[in-house]
Amino acid sequence: MLLKKTNIEEKLQRFKNKTISQDNILRDVKQILKQDTKKEETIINTLKTGNDSVENNFIFDLLETDKIYHINTIKDICIDYRLRFLDTKYFKNDIPYSAITKIKELEKSHGISINGYKIIAPSKLFKLENADDPLLFAPIGNGYYYLIHKWGNDLSPMRKWLMMPFKNFENLVFTTVMVSFLATYLIPDGLFSKQNTSAEFWLTFFFMFKTVGAIVIYYAFASGKNFNTAIWDSKYYNA
Image (cartoon, rainbow, N blue to C red; front, side):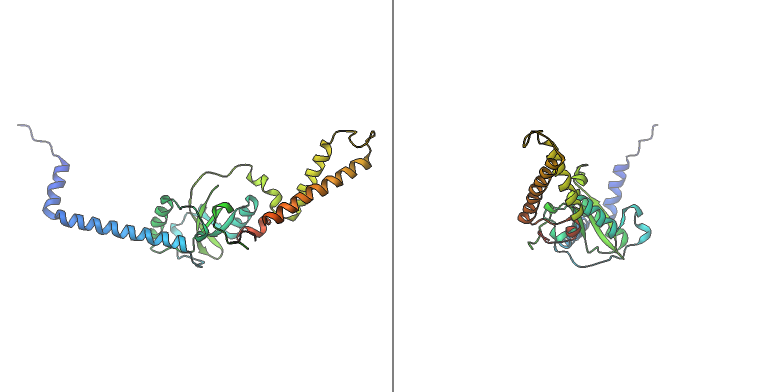
């Protein structure tokens, strides 16, 4: 006589029916989902409203060391790529659910409620007060921050070089000089006189330098632009 094979699913069903009622299961599941939803709402509210917390009581043994960054490193990257490092309350785009999930996992494993969230992103992604890709951080303390989540696409490889003129005043002057030299060389020979002399070249160069400089100054003042070193952690549009 062959023995009937054991169906584990049936065994589980029978055992569950003996020990737990269906009503109790539904009640427990609803309670868990309710608590999880409430936790997510709390996290989202904290991200939107922000606070001035400068540290969180993380369990250091549970942190990934390659995700810990000092404020000086963050500052250098923001200046090089013309990014801002601001509270999440200024971030105008939606924070993805994957970031919320990472926060929940961190809070659960460390037994804390995380505060003081900050984001690295281009200025256009922030709601700035008048005067391409986010990274979400939480403060650890002593100027250190923990990278919780990154989303979106990577920055263009040309962004660092395109933003180089705006890094500081010296870079802007150097760029203006180089553009003026290039524009001078592009002028056809004999346009102003039959003989090309060094004096003519330098006069043309100074004319180009004044023209390019005037355009740069007008653009800077008209649009309220400032150097990367001044705006990386400023909440003001025209800081």
